[in-house]
Length: 127
Image (tube, rainbow, N blue to C red; front, side, top):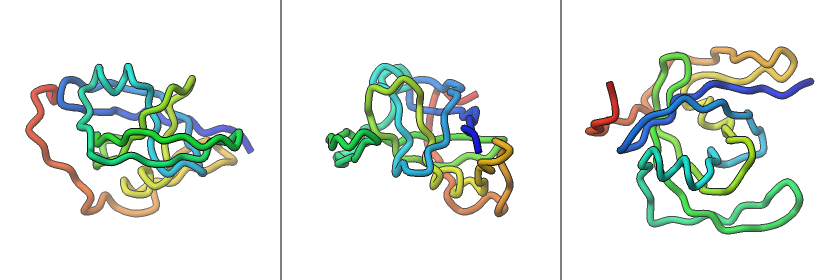
């Protein structure tokens, strides 16, 4: 078994950017660093989340909303703000878009057609 990385287009209110993310089966949220969140202009929610890190530490993170796209499928995703060396992609975000990661091959597999979790926003950063 190896690591699975996925190229994800992340869209905010200011900009969009392709981000290479590590699929994290233990993550509840997509995790991005504060600089990326600010650059893209992700929508801040009034919520925070208590996160348990792999090293056992507990932290509180602000939660943002973004639109994500993988292989031409788009949907909403909650993003936790945390300084991380590698952006993390939660498996639930992949499932929302109809994919799962195969840990043996490192490839994405389609598990369902694109579904009803589409996000419609007015965004000047979209093409």
